[in-house]
Image (cartoon, rainbow over all chains, first blue to last red; front, side, top):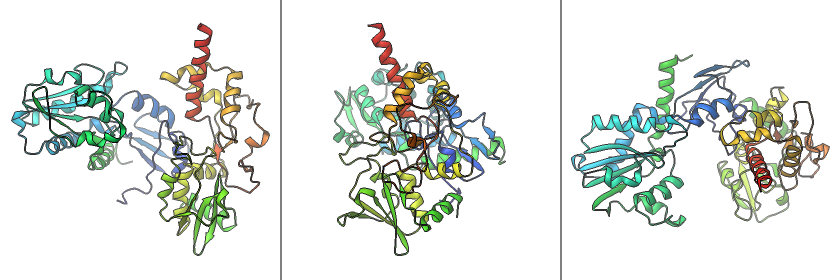
Length: 235
Length: 217
């Protein structure tokens, strides 16, 4: 795209580490985009600590400026992305006959983890004609495992509110939905998303891939940079 | 041209083509990378995209995942033909992430080493427990896990304690960036370790939890 002089990535448990990231870059001005769906322990504690960030703007002694953007899940353009994914996974299915479930991880360890999923569900509820729009979770109420009790429409669309397709969207959620009796074998992972709809518990169930796998997710990340500049000034 | 690329171009031009387990040789107008142990082989699988280095670096010869890219288990049997130094830099960023940047930072006096004690001391959440590691436990952990034979090819720049105490079970050359950690005796582009990696922080947690469980038996 040629929008930035350099683009680098770093990881908590892979290489390069967060601590080594600064040495991979030669620019004076660095935007940090956390590839996390929601605020939580990693975006609020681990990343700032490991990168040495003191707030949204960190001016270092070496003259470099670090700009810490918000995670993608909070952003307004995410709402439209979720709606698009819901439409694409259930083509031709009318919103008025459909319940939409956004499923996040949820955890008892950090209250902020579920905030973005709840906020997105509320926004879509206002903007759409779905019978219900609910945020549900793997590990906190309302539990995705109770999807049929939580919804009333004949069609139910489930969109995982995750950055990547991994164990949660491939294995854990399909089991919780009842799509798979037990953990599916690795070879059948991609098939999980290709069998829509599945008739289950008297409903048509449509299960989407993780929202972060949407190619337009790149645009959401670029919007986060724009949003940062709007809020904190370009310099 | 960036500063990292300029530094790399300079040493390659001067004939230094060894980094970790990789040999870099000039080839026509460009460069060729291969495993050092494949120096004389003619039956190598040819690659021409610097991005191929990412996959070449991901699994070892047995198909096992390589969580630590500086472990001495780079797979063999390939050669990577690249048109220019920028492409070599990109490939090396996949083979040995951040290492060229660490090298430049050290040469410019910007690389600060962090003692093991500081690294474990700042951990939170499930790794907070690593802050309780004893000096003897830390010494054992580093001496076993960081050794160049079978562990990691980086040169260690940090002490265990802020007072300067180093791991006792490692040879003096393990702390020398100029030393070829593969034992090949070449003048190398160094692989540097400025602080305990997160794999070892995770290992420290297992060590301490294991000892705790043992004591409670």
